[in-house]
Length: 162
Image 1 (cartoon, rainbow, N blue to C red):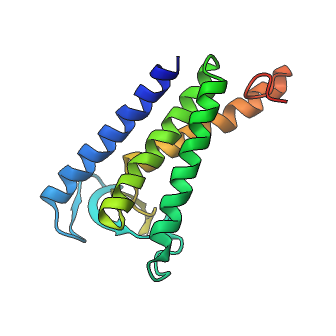
Image 2 (cartoon, helix red, strand yellow; image 1 turned 30 degrees about the horizontal axis):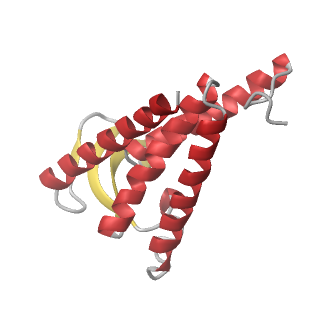
Image 3 (tube, helix red, strand yellow; image 1 turned 180 degrees about the vertical axis):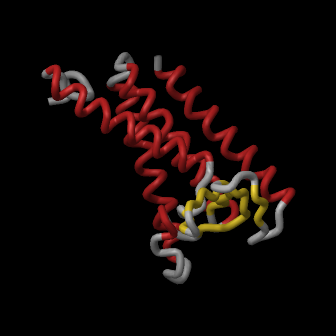
């Protein structure tokens, strides 16, 4: 089962890198194209973490966040091995792993993460994000959902972990 979970992570990484490469190839930094009344494509770079946290910290954050992603990936792979038969848990972790590694590739190779999805409403913009960020968010939401669903049935996610 571990191969399946790692394959899902690989699909996320590939989709993330392909979409980022396409945006970088077709957009100049800061360039934006309106697709709907609430969604734009925009090329922007994030040197920080989520929501540009620590983006202006002077450069040290590049390697700090790279190290955090690398350590988190090792821990996630451990949990994927240990709980390989717990489908929802491992699917969620696979999405998070793929997202973390997709953004890690950017940090190491570029020094920043490429973001391009820009949702907005009534003049308020959600911080731009990418496929990797989406996978991390969906994976985390699944974990939260499963933790509540599991607590109602007496199960703990992951099963047998306490």
